Image 1 (tube, rainbow, N blue to C red):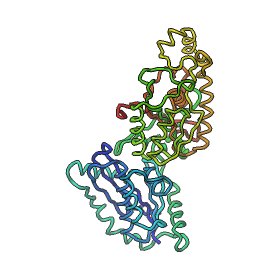
Image 2: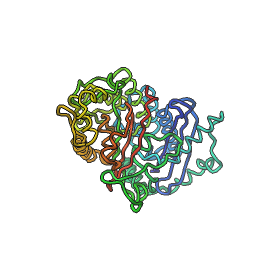
Image 3: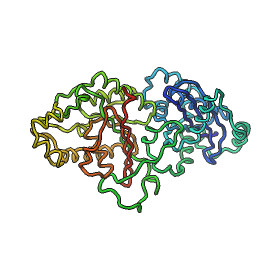
Image 4: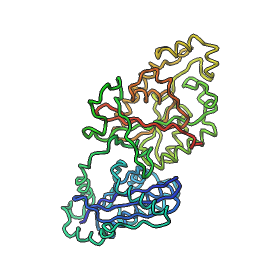
Length: 439
């Protein structure tokens, strides 16, 4: 029974915007390219283009051998999880495409595997070639060597590699995975989720700055950063999302866990819906975890509904309790509690007036929460929907920065950051703090 690997990708320059897909069929043992497909498809979203790439890749595999066992490898977590049956397909544009993909080959012959974007470069290149051709008013045309692939592919199947037990598609798929068990080293700074979350189709993303997750900043370059040294495996990646706006946000009032627990404002609801679409377009998030406060739960639910996931509430992600300062502006606190405010600004041990939580206490709480979530989500990408202070503390710890750095960060409503935690204790950080596109 022949076995193939299909790698597929799609992109949209605008999402929606001019879009295209690419797909390649590979021999799992030799790595030889057996077929290539690419096409400009006009204006579409990333997800539509990715599904179109999947369909084209499966159809190319079927043309080579209708009884083939196929391992599909894609960097779209959304497509992989939906086609594997683990995520619900809610978007009306995706349902017919998923149904079409499922009919190309019998379900028992196809398995799906997520790969980081940097390991899907062949299909990504084809998708970008297709989009470039579409920009010129043309359709993608294969090179001379690519055009000969399909003509010669049948000859490569004359002596197929050893198969699993006769008729056992699962065993055949396992053999394909075994042939791929030693992939090429990841690009510098490669991380599960962060690159694919913030990358743009066809763009070359520079590697993140890698620093210890805790402790002082390094003083030399003697230790390689994650991705430059030995393969440390897939990191656990936390995508950090500050909740959308409430009525208090634009007024810059203290709003912690001891206040009125406000709901999202109309602007905040729009932000939550927009960031949900942005995260769905990348398809990297595998679980959604939220602070227990209402503004976070509402933001998290908007994302989870879009991704077909459930929301897990984590008390450790709550905001600091600002005590008697809750609901006040900075100027009002300065007027009413000047000495307490000055002490709070001067030391992380100082707590807000009236029994609030100090930054030192919050750091202990959030560090413990981080460690607990890392153990539960090893090698996976989790969305943490939380507040200004927890995000700043997680970023500070990842950078090994001093406590006073908390006052030097500004975090917009519904903004995203991502921290990848590696097996050697290092972390790499990516920031996206521009929410103008979410309004």
